[in-house]
Image 1 (tube, helix red, strand yellow):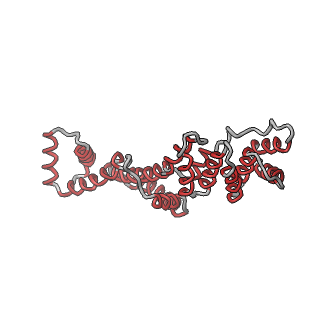
Image 2 (tube, one colour; image 1 turned 180 degrees about the horizontal axis):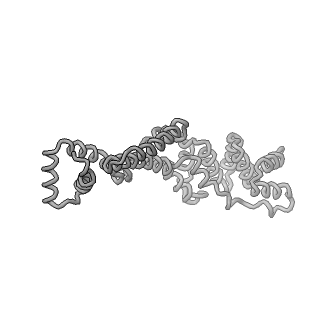
Image 3 (cartoon, one colour; image 1 turned 60 degrees about the vertical axis):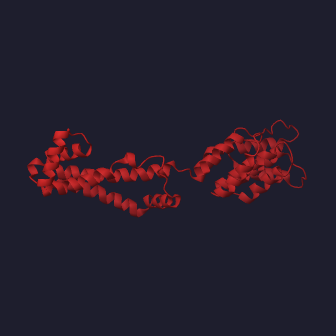
Length: 270
């Protein structure tokens, strides 16, 4: 193929693949393909690139790769090997631009880079749109509607514990509440909630669950709160199956605490 016609041929190939040629021009181009083996070879390359770059066929509602494969790819992109590959591609691009002047070859090179970019975008799109347990925990662990302990004037220790918790001084609130509940046979659900959440924020999962189980077994009006916070304990640990089972208990009764949130969270976990 005459390199003087690289630009013209490239535009024709591109227009043909995008179905932008008139019926007459399409027929003429197909005749060219039959009579010019080099053009046909170039056309096949561009046809493959065009298929690879058609991202509309890649990203849609049916694009649901296996979660384990996504995790593997995500780990790879974070690896030193991937960083080295990225640096290599950048160097190759610089050298290629310096040493090659052919319009078609440069367009082809950048098409290849574009195809690679689309592939990376699809992977990152998939990874970022996947609901990780930690992301969901960060979304649903809003402690804005916790009960108040400050109204209990006879228990200044509890008010101090709430204040420490709200200041995110979880180490201190955990110690304070743990000290408070020593030797007490009966505890208010609100105290158990703060004790459990302080433990949860410190990744003391077994203790957190024990506090929330006490609420669940209390047969009080706040019983269902124990299920919600227990689900969050499992969520933070990435124990999705366990979290789902607890959420399903909440959804058995619309009167249960955070029924709507439990429904939304369950949808994102499934």
